[in-house]
Structures are given as C-alpha cells and as structure tokens.
Image (cartoon, rainbow, N blue to C red; front, top):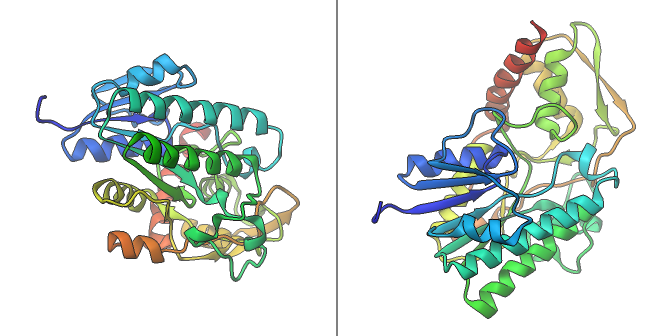
Length: 324
C-alpha cells in the first residue's frame, strides 16, 4: 500500500459520501470511511469503515491518521423540512461546527496533503435571491453576508475556518459550494430528503388521477446537479491548485412546479399538483459556473431530466419494495 493514495471520507454513511467512496475506489485509492451510521442503501465499499462521532476530537484525528487526502462532508443537515423550520437550528450549528473544527484540526495535526470541505449554496445572501428569474449566486456575492438559514451561517463560518487554516497554518484546503446534489442511493423519505427525492417519492406513491402536494406557490426556482457531475467537479478541484470557494452546481434553473411536472412526465402517470403552504427557502437560486469554468476548464453537462430519470427509477423501486 506504500505507493497507493489514501483518503478518508468523513460522512461516508451519507448520500454524497457513499458515492465519493466509490469514485475514489475506482481511481485506485485506499479509502477509509467514517460516519455515525452505515450507509443505509448499501453504498459502503470503503476498505475500512468506522462508526464514529466526529464531534469528538480524538475520533476526528484518528480518522485522518495516515491519510493523504481528507474529504469532509459530515454535517447535520436535511431538506427544506429540516433546515427551514428553525426547530433544528441549535443542533445543525453545534454538530456541524464541531465536526468541521475537529476534522480540520485533526488533518493539520496528522499533516495530511489536502483536505476538501463541502460548503453550500445556502451561504449566499437572501436579498440576492428574491427574484426567482434572476438570482445572484456568483462566488464573490457571498458578502455582505445574509444567509437565509442557520445552516447557511454555519457553512459560511466553516469556509472561513478552512481558509484561515490555509493562511495561518499552511493546510492545503479546497472549498466548494454544493448546489442541490441529487441521485440514486440517497435519503428519499423521513423528513430529511431534498426536493428531487421527495418529488420522486410523492409521484411514485400517488394514485393515478389524484394530486400530490408541493410546498409554496411553485414559482420559486432552483437548479439541481446530478451526483456523478458533483464527484467529477470535486476530484478536478482537488487535483487543481485552486483553493476555492467555487460553486459546484448546474445552471439549468427550473421553477419548482415545472420540476414537479417533469417528474410526473417521467413517471407516465396522470397526476396534478396541489400547492400548499410550507417551508420553501429563498425565491430563486441557481449556480453561477463562470469561476469553475475559468479555474478548472470544466462545467457540468448532464441535463436535469437524464439525472431525474435515473433517480426516479431507483426511488420508485424503493417505494414498490416496501408496499409489497
């Protein structure tokens, strides 16, 4: 194993983490995974997997020991129903901040070569995202800061933490802001699922000729990035000399009602949409990919529909399996 690259994926029990383990394995890495839980959809292909709590400094340092690269994806998070109600703010900020403080310091103490941190589009100011047709999410627009959630504030703090370790302590960091990553083998029920998975589940569960519920008026806009594109961007960023922060997202913006209609069309069902009050976040959000194109000479290319077809196929199979 002496010439083999080594990496630890913190949060390997999660959706993106599980897929990242597979990507690194495919590139020949020795991969260690750590999380509070096993990957619930069987995406557990790490060479070593530890059930461990990264809120504990010793656990975090041990996870980094002997590793060339650290990928810090561990966080307390979920979809709009978890993030925007305000009921989970203390846990979200406390748990995620501790994970970041401990993993970063552990990586510094263990002298790892590079560490990747997954920030979020939720750091962008709410006032730049009031117009659903023209949200401003280029990287330089993050300040003056005014995120729309405590989740966004914690992510912004942690970005600054990583870049401070780079400036003061020489830790080679990479920071990316994820924009709504989706795909198969992720949370699709239970309250922490995000819009793509929630829509796929609702459509799969809803009987022909009836309606399913969509939070808000449906005119709010978002973009969504398929998991394979996300992983490609992460690896390209790690291989580059650019610290970030950089957006990792799609520029294919869509209104939420149109997104719901897309899922209905993929399913082949005859369904209607019922808009109801509910947590919906900012009015508009879309990735600005000017910087990633400039720095990495790359941008995502998979159409939203292609990714959603794959995701719907997987989630509808999950729904069918539990309804038998």
